[in-house]
Amino acid sequence: MDQLRCSCISRQHQCEAYVLFIDINATIGYNNQTQPGFGPESESELLIEDILVNDDNKPIQPVSGKILPRYAGPATFARLPELLDVPHCDVAIIGIPFDSGTSYRPGARFGPSAIRQASRHLRTQYHPDYDIEPFTTIQVADAGDIACNPFNIEEAITEVERHSGELLDNVDAIMSLGGDHTIALPLLRAVNRRHGPVALVHFDAHLDTWDTYFGAPYTHGTPFRRAAEEQLFRDDASMHVGIRGPLYSRTDLIDDAEFGFKVVHCDEFQKHGVDHVVQRIRERVGDHPLYLSIDIDVLDPAHAPGTGTPEIAGMSSRELVGVLRGLKGLNLVSADVVEVAPAYDHAELTSLAAATIVYELINLYCAGINNR
Ligand SMILES: [Mn+2]
Image 1 (cartoon, rainbow, N blue to C red):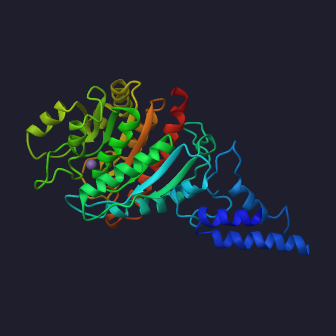
Image 2 (tube, protein in one colour; image 1 turned 135 degrees about the vertical axis):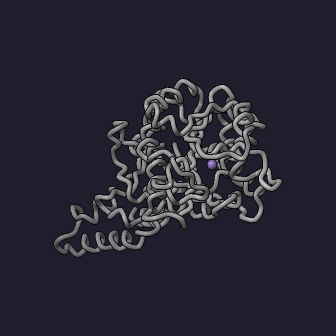
Image 3 (tube, rainbow, N blue to C red; image 1 turned 180 degrees about the vertical axis):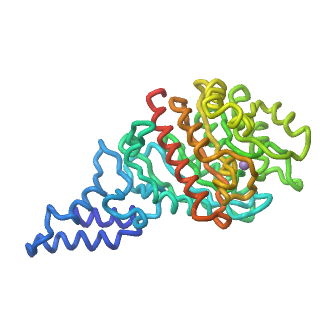
């Protein structure tokens, strides 16, 4: 049994595997030698049991911050188990380290690892605003990163579509860590295959419905025009939230409206407040399957400087969290958080915002299960 557990630990919790291996042997050794201070009641015994509880009735939990300090331990999102190490999975976290579609500052390929690092800080046992313990309610696991070709955008898109589709064949929902916004197109294709056209609510400073950049159809500024052409989202239930800043042309907004998007301009938060925006989104989305695509540049650069195309006068992180919590009960089916470029970040502001948003999304998903 202990050998079985050892191999499980070494795959599931890479970073502390060595420490736990020592603890297991110490426990065995002290049981044999009856040395004081250890044995079945010892802290090391609790450590092993708490981390590796694995029966059919209880999801495998993240490593507790009360047992192993949050700055230590596995490098998975929120120190969750890896997908390989859970008997079944409801929600998978998947990293997509791709940024070859960026038009200004590159670096979002390092987003997934930065978000995972910042997610160590999360306290994940209980969310008071939802009144749930998400990780005892559903099994969430980290599925690692999708291997994307950094030199061929079309090939990378195919890879993201295939891998995320295979994942969605085996889990109920995926939360994707970008990566630049190009990846939303293959993610929507995969989600569409399972759920049909979704209500798409897109948080972003920018429309991302432009046609081409320098003749290139697949970039981080064009995914939702391609998605509209492929009819991947509902034109009667989708919207942009947080849009602001100058445009390339007067016709940008006209084209965008023809694709079926309604726009919540960022100024609406100041004029009308979070509750008003929540109400607009809820009325627009209704009961349709909801996909959330959150570009971290929807936040003001003061709240999220580490991104490729920052835009001033944005949402605060409090407003974003407030809107997400206001969507409780909607039929969220999957989501992405993109455009975290840690090279431009300071003090993990951006990656912590992204990690917290992903955690909020998991809670939002969990809170909506009863309505499915
Ligand atoms: Mn974007």
